[in-house]
Image (tube, rainbow, N blue to C red; front, side, top):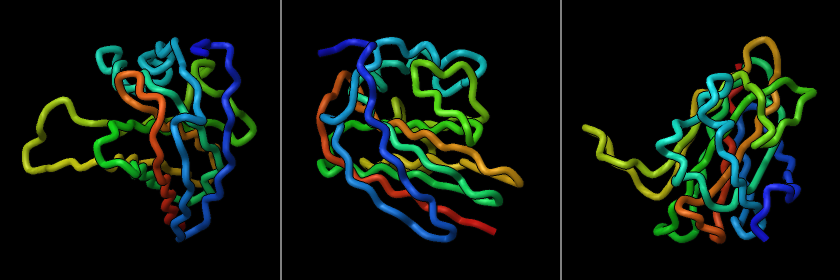
Length: 166
């Protein structure tokens, strides 16, 4: 069933100070999100509309709290290195839980996906890494969406959350 009214399953994750935590996932457990306009609204600025095909597969969600004075890196590693996965992560207030497409605004949104062109001096493999997720003197809720490009609806992956706390 490819309908927007589907309710997503949201897995709780723990961000342990100065540790890495890993979780297994599969796109087959996710939902399709037809309306991606939340991503290019000026209140979110996750990715431009021209890149929407990279985020049209099933979406699998994770959430947890970034401890204050911490920086988090999210890495998605597909089991099949040919799988074209994308990841986005956005920060909101600790007491909020807006799941896309019902995201009116966020504090920060970062994405990682397969590049559409080469970048000078850099190479890309099948992993996707989102950085610059930061909480200073206030903790924030982090919501992570792992999705497939071009309507991909299945594929196993490992999600690695690296938390560095001062």
